[in-house]
Length: 312
Image (cartoon, rainbow, N blue to C red; front, side, top):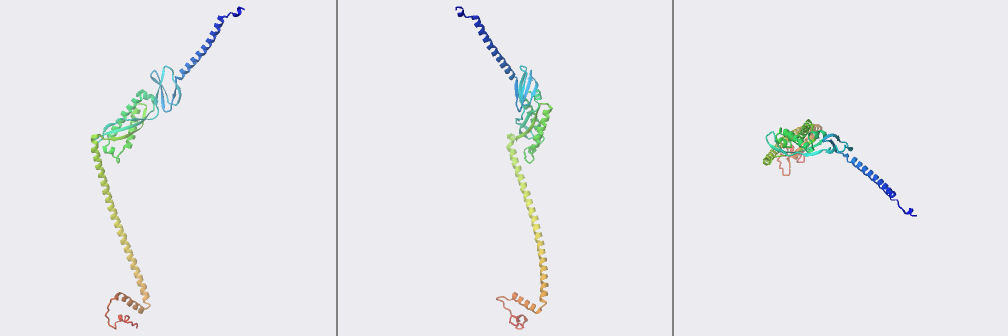
């Protein structure tokens, strides 16, 4: 009986130790697994639409990822940075230039640009800000050269402006300079937002422009009046010619009608000369006798016979 009440402490200790060892191994496994997953995920990265991923190893570019998707880097020795792949707008600083006729104007441009080759851009410009700064220098240089070949009036006057072609020329020449220096960027478009005068010259130039506009308007009015007078004179001449021709044609037709009528009358009256004589006499009465007409004729006058009622 006494042996049944005795507890073996060594056996109990062994059982408890075995249980703790089992849980410790399981916990350690999950910790290692979690650390491994964390290690893997921290060295994976996502390439998004509209961006470049630049992988550097000890500061040197070893790979450029441009296609959207999941990629990786070697842990500890490689790092990842991002560059924009989409088009960007850059406002070029306002600057003064001299025109061909020695006048100063202020120009304000903007450029639409993008990164074509990130490796060249990093190699030659290092940063996006440095690339924009270099592009700005080229834009200013080309703009100053091209506008310096034009007179002030040719730049600001809408009727003589070649600004549309100038924008294209500036874009083309800036791209040539960027390509020659291998900056890995290109300019899609360069536009002049405005061209202003320095404040000290602005009012005098505006006054001169207004005067020139008035002069141009007066010239147009004078030309209009001259054209109006010329058209009216030409129209009057044509109308007179038409009326004269119509009158001549009418006279000719009338004379032909009168001749034809006379011919018909002669043919008709020649058939009865006595009736014709009577008819002519009656017609003459219409012309000579009125309400207050007094005629003094001999009683035996042939002209008075019909008036007296004699028919024989």
